[in-house]
Length: 122
Image 1 (cartoon, one colour):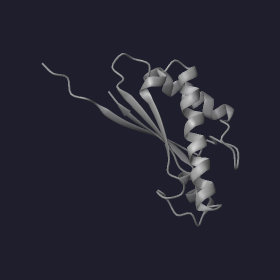
Image 2 (cartoon, helix red, strand yellow):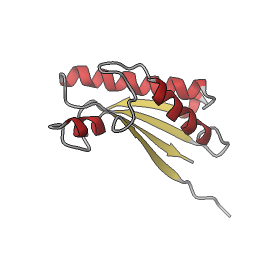
Image 3 (cartoon, rainbow, N blue to C red):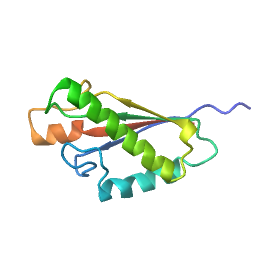
Image 4 (cartoon, rainbow, N blue to C red):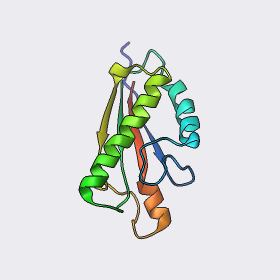
């Protein structure tokens, strides 16, 4: 019997959890705790790949936010590698402010848009 791949998306946003300081790609202590929990689910033999995608809110220029989202995705990937997730199974991508999930006109909306998504393939 062939086992079907199970895909999962894990979204970590700044809403309720501050992942990064303002204008920074450095993970906060809270983000490290969250990612340490997530990493335990990603170290099993069934893991095929994890794509780490960074997003920003609309504060700042498009080009700046693109770079910031890439640096944030890389920070998350580096932390996961340090936690034992195989580097060869991780890829990173930044999407800047191009894919908001909420209105950038409010603090709460911007917080939701400052996020990192982990696309997990098993």
